[in-house]
Image 1 (cartoon, rainbow, N blue to C red):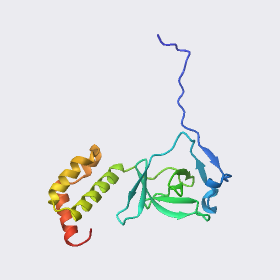
Image 2: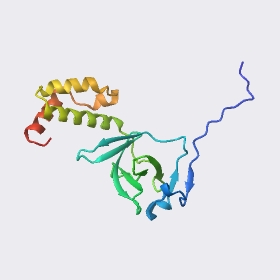
Image 3: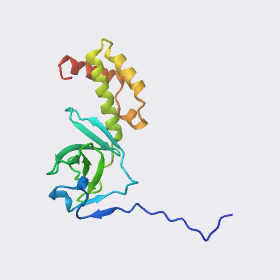
Image 4: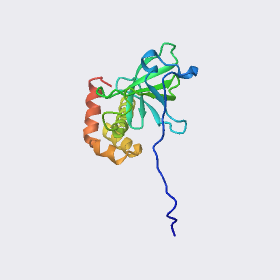
Length: 178
């Protein structure tokens, strides 16, 4: 039997807002020191490193992509902006790309996460690398990589067929775009 006198209350995590940071690892530039909040130590976002199409480092944080923006004055904190130009979310990490905080000027993204796009991007990157170095047909490379990638259903739905991908890789390779 259930005891009706007990109630379970679910609450959202409480964020600790700060107007100035006292620890040296949290020293921020003047642009974001006034508007920032620190997540509780138990709530850390999942950060994955990848490369952009131009070969620059990109962070994937809970399905959202972030590009490097700048350092603070002391070069101890990196600022990352959302890859969607219409979104104003800024993410702060230390020099080793470990999470510090989000900026509070814009906490919520103005768009949905697109983790499938990043899975497909990484898959295509590995296909291009193999096509440039191996003498196996591009279609075989595409089929093998698609089998080995273990993509989510959403990523598979956005992915073109192997013939289309193979032709794109061949065209890019023939024009030396790879």
